[in-house]
Image 1 (cartoon, rainbow, N blue to C red):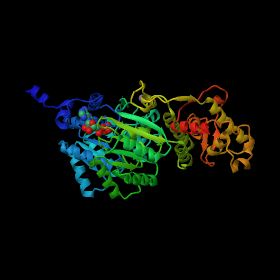
Image 2 (tube, rainbow, N blue to C red):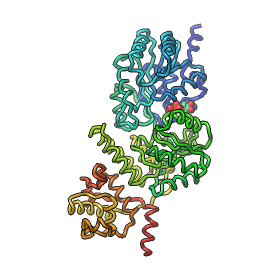
Image 3 (cartoon, helix red, strand yellow):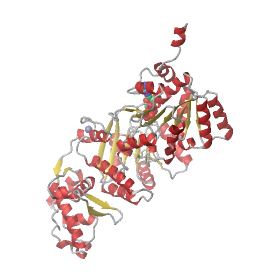
Image 4 (cartoon, rainbow, N blue to C red):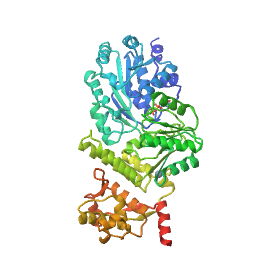
Length: 539
Ligand code: ADP
Ligand code: ZN
């Protein structure tokens, strides 16, 4: 008799099978689920598509079965909560979400159900947690022993160093302060070392066990190309590799999103634009279409994507460079959730660097320390873009993982030809230095390259820069090559683009290393530069 009642309590594996219809746990899911069911705190880092939801849904069910009451899931996106609650209902799990669109009666109804212990999972937005009403509710639940677990999804949003800071996440530290005995778990798919540390501190998860999965997404092929004619390059990429397939194209500005969507439509593709400037009904309708239709391309700002669970997105293209590697990784991670081959393609150029720098420098809300961190993160992305080694090795290294060349990125598949640009770099640095010395002011990239290439312009005569010793010393290289040299010098923090002073170039202390011959500069051969220099030789 006793034995049979024991066997009636479903194990986590039973729940996985009976409720969700899966036969095995994936990767670290089992360990996480066991730890949380036993009442431990957890920090879960798992790539997109890794299966984070089950990591709290199964403990929620198991702990509810054991009489611990309701699990509160904190998630930033109402649409996502809606989907999850719908899916849980279909699986026969009692779940609900609390949101600001509900009437007082509806909310009261849900609260009563929670207090009676009838709900297993309740989703709420972070700003909701800090309201007096919610705090009262949580207190009452806790007094009755019916507050089982807090699961904080997209936990990187708590950190200002992360790529999607949401101030309302800050108040979540109160969970630990008010309910020190209720277990908590935080989950995220993107956090570098700094963001991770900040998350732990802000959410008071110092004693939580950390479950860090590999961030690798082996089915995603990474390609980063130099921007020459971005729209043409994008069209060629889609037509060559993704005809009729679903994808997302990220652009920096709303205006550009509209332009690119028009361009793709003109080219006969099923494309739509998505950005925060559009009416919410229009956005909803386009998002639905993207989820439902086959082979639709969504051209969007970063306003699009979080919580979009479309398994067969075959490519993510960045037409403009994102802010940092975390953002890049989060966005590219939306490709190939089904595990089948997918492409992450990015075009980038000097302008991207200058624009991103400008945005950091001119953001007025932030402290100097903040800007410094942001610049460092941008530089890391820049280095990734310029890297001639395996992209995946560099990416994973950024998230603290060691790996071997992958065989599934542009650099592995077509090892870039490289040239020693140390001499060229030295010429450029000297030129920036001489000009600054001679004129007492700094100049921008275009003019510096004109001096190096010995181009006679009005500005040249005006400042007598054609009399400088560095005038024309770089005529042997094409402009595209000089741009590559400059980008590399910026990536290595030897030159800074001063966006507060007409994008002029400033030498940084590290420049000394190349000037003194202590560091070398190796660059990838540029397809465009090759053509230009050949054309030049024949004249
Ligand atoms: P994440 O939130 O980490 O991006 P999800 O929780 O949405 O990932 O899970 C991604 C997909 O993998 C979902 O379709 C989910 O049902 C599925 N999944 C998760 N765990 C398992 C498992 N153990 N076995 C089979 N499929 C799983
Ligand atoms: Zn590789």
